Image (cartoon, rainbow, N blue to C red):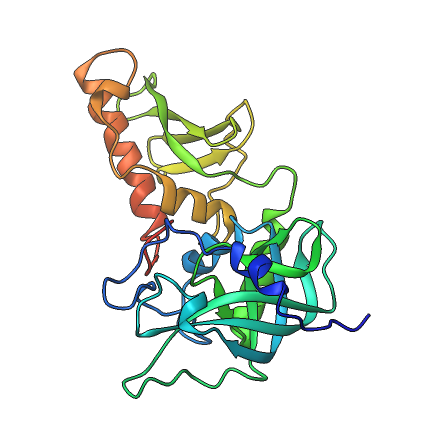
Length: 289
């Protein structure tokens, strides 16, 4: 069905407001990186931050940009152009709501020193969005900069993260540490530390760090009630690695360690630091929501 442009659509479109809680630059009113992640040079964590909070992910190509007048952009900084974007949907990577072959959404676009906006027509992006109830031809970005410029690298990463994120047992966001225990072995230098984590939806999450004489220290992670040594440490740039590297507190406090003995607490803290070091930096370059 052909989508007919009429002025009475504007209030409905403008009612789909940008999230106010997103971190913004005081000068531009937008996150430091503008309205999108670039085609090259972005990390796994930055993409995962968007994929994991987006009910809908749309691969689209911009067809038309309609700038909104000041009267319909109240509160928008003068160096930002608010526009209604019309785009052709190339594919729907994630989402249960039906989406039309062509969609519209609001986008705040930084102006350059001459007051111009970049030429976006025919450019391809991944839009991290949510649906608009009752309107298959409209979407809402989950945050003002929830667009990812298309490149083969970004395409592979977005699709890989999405495949993991939609699994029933996908690892959920870590909210903290519930408890930790260290059990010494029968031989000096041996022992095991277990760390139990809390998550957004109550998913069981635990770490095990095992030390044995004449063997390298080894750690495993489990997302079930039972922590097993058979579960390997996660590979870098996987969803489980991301949840741990970006979600674990950087330190384990002595108060979180059971048994109460100072030596046990110190050993548990050292084992926990071993996990943090093994995971490496999260690699996030932008503020998280």
